[in-house]
Length: 620
Ligand SMILES: Nc1ncnc2c1ncn2[C@@H]1O[C@H](COP(=O)(O)OP(=O)(O)OP(=O)(O)O)[C@@H](O)[C@H]1O
Image 1 (cartoon, rainbow, N blue to C red):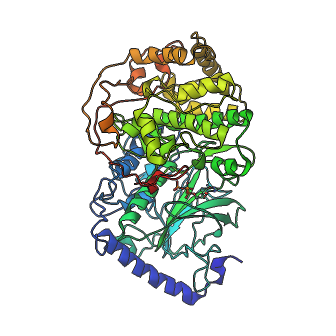
Image 2: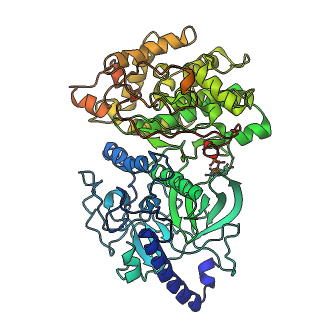
Image 3: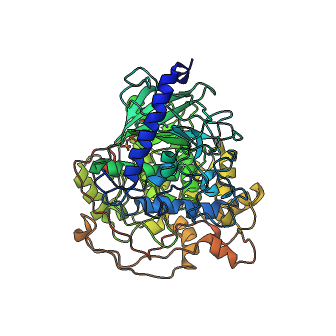
């Protein structure tokens, strides 16, 4: 028997009453009452009535470029400043109101049904981010989300959100009174919804429904603790599927909580738009009275960091395989203009089949088309020099540096620069010409690969897609076909923007890249730089920019970069001007978009006792 079956009718009535109270308190929150005034809903994430915005749809290849820009804008804006004084936009926590159109998804990619679906509409498999209709009424105290493309189980393409209390401390998911906590239920795509709604729920942009569909997610054992909360095992008793429930306690009057919520909000926004075998899949989220729960794909093997702690350094074949998978995830991510910013062993999970998943997207950020990032975030030992220096902003190349550090971590079971204390390591990274020591026992290919990743000049680092062709990882075959197809979907513009390349084209393209006199073994840096340079030379435009001189702790010790590159225009635009697809044109490679044009507000780091494997968020 499931938890809901134990509820008495009295409890149900109490629950409804509680919902009204909750709605009222939420309305107060929405208006900024009793929250120290920090909660506001009038940001670009919601309309003036405080109505909430939709979650993203699963992306079709034709939707993708728009979806990336549109969807990530919200994520980007939510976390762009990084200041904890920023207003918190709850609309991005996934509580979204069906029928609302925030204007951000009003292009041709919107589904015909979108915007026209009211509270009575059936849930469709189309993701609500585009539908503008996100929060379906389910019961008086729960709101159902629209589906994800990869849902947790059979018939589970809809996620629910409920306003109900959860007991963070109870691994069993039981509340203090013995009742189980409420968790979202993935519902079939065609489940009807009821139009009934209460005033209080409507007033906060949520609709009440009489259609009660109980949740089947049950909270299990504690998997671990992070900076922001606890991660529990979750079990769906309908589908038999497991998930990881990341639970964060909401304490709205606390400065740290605001920052935590912002980070988690950002993680949700980003994750909800990603679907790749090497990225932890987002299933849904749920806002309770005291907690925000994020439902994620469960990866039972633990992190690379944990495996290293338990079993010691990995052998090179394992490193090769994991590196290839990490690269696949990064290529996908970077193709969507998103930088992870915290690649390290602790944030990479491994499943029992050896499939690797990038996790912990709290740091990830979308790169706006005309700006790079200037914030100072990441784990110090894995941090790229340009991040430490925080001079010209940075791009997806920071993940490539961190990947190099992670390979060293896998090879030695220690992070690079681990002989230095945290702050000393930061100085070493930012203020020296050194790169971390590369162990002698590694093959030449491995050394070559690592050196490519650890080039101090970010513009000299190859992209993830380019590195996939490096001999160190090139021959990895695990799930390669599937990954190529997904990566190909992520890069439709890589070819000509009008069609998705066939595998033959992909192979031809790869061949043309690798045939460019690339001899990684002999001259790794020079040859790859040459390939990369070919694309950059054709589009180098602006060579300097003003940056704030006071952002980095190391800034005073080293002159600012005197120049930087504007990377090629976004391929979508580049290809618009091209008549056809030319496999020999390296500008077709999705090189980094180091568009250092827009200066974002800076985030000044405050380092406090950084530790290897520790989260940068602990340092801020
Ligand atoms: N999807 C998941 N599947 C299985 N275990 C997970 C999953 N996500 C997180 N964990 C585990 O839960 C623990 C806490 O994870 P969480 O992401 O909250 O914090 P963290 O990454 O360890 O630290 P921080 O957030 O401070 O960087 C980790 O030990 C991690 O291995």
